[in-house]
Length: 338
Image (cartoon, rainbow, N blue to C red):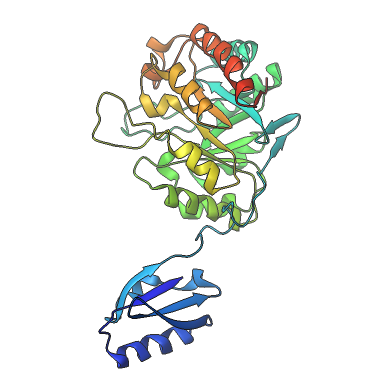
């Protein structure tokens, strides 16, 4: 951390600042550059509230010299994190496709979709049981019964399953869920993230629609700092001025995250667009951008879906998409895990 002081800084204020810093158990080193004094800080800087430093009138600017997300940083951990769930590998050159309905509606529905997406090449089955919805009158999911039906589909197909948790009190229902999803609305639910850090289950963390990439990585840091190293990041679109899509897919975040962190990076073209007609092409774009996988919503009857039917592609459209995914991945040096 570098603190640049003002060229006309009052010396008493400078002394007060240095004394304040010295009480924080960090190393302080002064130098001069461009006619101003520069203070270099080293040590455990995470415990310092840098907004307080700005209250000293002598401070011109503060510059970070290292990542605040120390466990998520590729600088500190250069090797890619590889997550294994049984015979399934996430990261490490493998490309995984998560597919399934937004909501689990019935045993017949989830089983039919599970069998169809597996036949087309999906490696992980998704299905919402606990549904956080914008409207309190919208379908809220089957809750624990939805998890039970998702587990039935898992037993039928052998596919690992992922479902969203909305409250830590529901954690006991996720004993047989392979990947716990933290949705965009809960990306900064820090108490939930800290509790999930105490588990060892893989956590699929979605980026919030109004959050920066650094905030996204700091949320992952909460889980990692708790000891759970099995974190998967998922870009799902951010809110912009554009209203022809549900959100705007931040495709640039995929290669950027791959540079900044060692964690696997997925993307969700369904939630980012809200339009089934462009989901397959967006999925291919995510693949080409270097993602380790995509999450796609698939429904056998989108018009009558309990939730998010507009962005759900049909099993036949998913099959066509997977044909192209399997053509693109080898060009990029990735292997599609089926």
